[in-house]
Length: 407
Image (cartoon, rainbow, N blue to C red; front, side, top):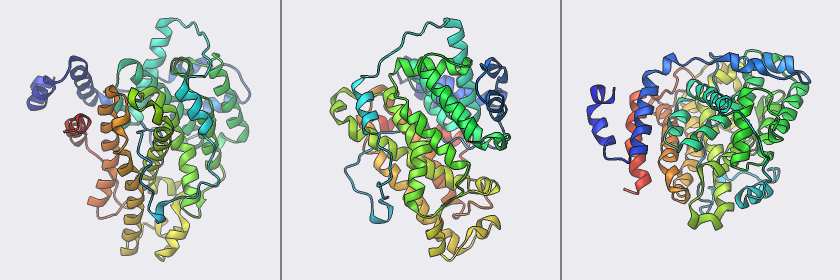
């Protein structure tokens, strides 16, 4: 397929290592077959009976028309450069994640011996892969460039995050209350104790033991989902940052042990983890700008209310899709905030394990391109959707490779 339809690109892949060229071929094939990838919902039929399990199962029915895809591959970034005053968010109420960083970076989390049928485990990861491919193309393309064990772990994380997100954003979200989320949190504890409830849980149970992940970021992410059940407005960037930490910064904490840190930077683990959290916040801010209309349909506005007022606007401007000069200036400011986090990210990629630098660069560049699209639409994200085409995504890969090589 490569040789027939992408000759120049194909020749370029022949200059790479065998493992990397196979990853690129898989990626190209996945784009061609993307429309054929359907979620195998029978994977969820093995859920054990638990408190509110019926509501959990109903709430987990995927809504293909509303894909929020909040969780993405995270990048370690430098914290040496202080944030501009306008973007330096208050950390007074930020969760304490220092203990998590210490435990994961030192590998002192006890591992449990899980004995799972290899065939069942293979099917579990395959199910997670399908969910990732269907609901998060940029995230999935980046993951294909990782080593085999790392990309499987990333798929398991994404599948769990997506299922968690569906509890509050799926078509059956009206069934979700505090009791359902309590049950989901208990289920996470079971997964970490080696007692998965279904086949997809099995993949996550294997991942958290293989990479010695801590449970706190998972519980914090659920806190973010709880916020979505009652909080629909954010007064300022401080409130918004806290929300972004819960729903996306936590993924940075989960991801660093998987993508790995270069041996010479192990002593800088604290700063790398904190930088990964910042990357998660940047990804979420980008996600908010891309999905502002979809969120408004759910009566949610993930934009600082004080800054809307600063530009003489209210939520009604969003609901009525008023693309004014004031709106464009407002969006410019939001893009600057998101880009600040991405700019910091570039300083830290060199601290990653060498095998992860290319996929991480690719993931960052692919997702950051959404901001460029909003700009090219003249800052109109109310009547126009920011979309990065497949061809653009493919062309990003050699650029990401060059960045990873330091060219």
